[in-house]
Length: 115
Length: 115
Image (cartoon, rainbow over all chains, first blue to last red; front, top):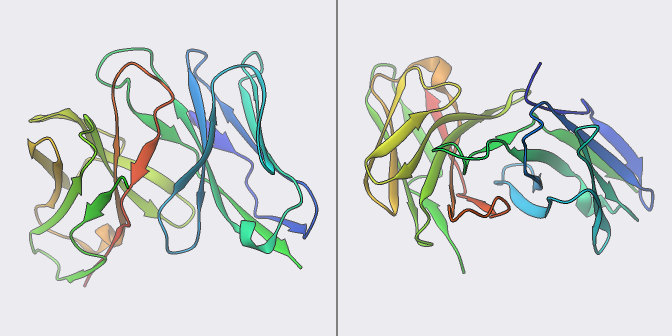
């Protein structure tokens, strides 16, 4: 089992719809969770992070974390064509030692928002 | 404005050549990382460093080495380049201060082609 898995995609949604991106992780000791967006030919950029159970909202984006189910998701409301990108889930696995600062990434989900 | 820079955006090398990829960050971050990114395989960690002269293998270190002589600079070395090392290489840095939600910043990437 991979440490971090994302829904395989690609995901296609119409403009204005809600896009739902999902991620599961295997290590129960994981502490924090990140969503990165990567446009084609560009490097990843952080959208948001979450470390407490529940929802965290930032504009059109909502991150949801359920540590009991080892599940984190990203909802994009009112999706726009400019949201079309690859979305990467990343998890801070490890509570100490030299690996403390290392993020483990999922394989990414390609999202296309069509007009 | 925080910045991670990489020495080249595009690089073409021949099989068997020794290749150096340089990365510099100006944020005084302790952690630095080298990834490669290939379609369908996501971001794969090659090596990371948590301090000057300190390094740890990531998931795919074979065929690569690294050097960190100064805190701000992290170099990836391909001792004898092979065609299967053709890829996008991404450098990243992250503060290590006990906060599990620190953002990881990426450089623009180097697209390496080995002929």
